[in-house]
Amino acid sequence: MQKPFLIGLTGVSGSGKTTFLKRLETAFTKEELCVISQDNYYKPREEQIIDKEGVHNFDLPTSINQEEFHRDIVALTEGKTVLREEYTFNNALAAPTMLELPSCPIILIEGIFIYHYKEIKELMDLKLFLHVKETTALSRRIRRDRIERNYPLDDVLYRYEKHVLPTYERYIKPFVHEADLIINNSQNFDMGLDVVVNYLKKILAEKKV
Image (cartoon, rainbow, N blue to C red; front, side, top):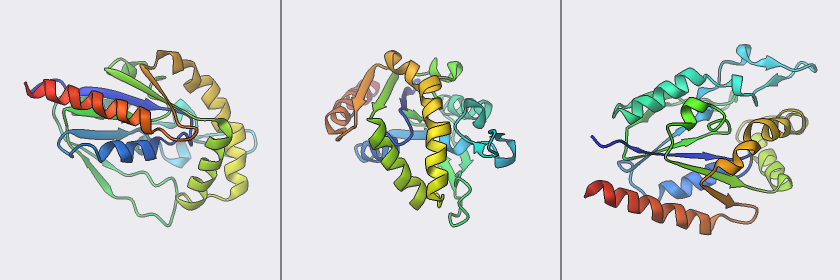
């Protein structure tokens, strides 16, 4: 078995990573590309740090079960299939499903802390950074958390100001200069997506030779 090609994708919360991934996945078959998301490795709510206002902070590197995340990425590189229950962000209206992640020639690792975790970053062959204006990221975060995660608006705004932005400045933004490709998504990411798709198609073709 050839070693899979590992890609990392990060950016501030609300930068459009989920949309980018959905578009990227349409360009490949399920046998060619596998996506493993940091979002499915959050620790239980009772294990999260509580800030001085009594609010759980899910926007810290310690919020993630880093060991299990790293373990499953390594398993995928070894050709194994990973099973992981979907994390529903404490949304009682959403029923979690069991995700089956097969090993593929291309493995995409997604999440806000993936470059902060040194042992995970060192596995990557290509590092992508999705960039967006802060005002755009905030409006996207509000829509997502209100609709998909059933969070109250006041809670969304508080977390963005007190948790999301400080985390971005400390744990995400410093790695922008280590990215192999920075994709601007303040308006759209079409050109950047085309570049990534064409490059990955080339990688796949080389693996088949």
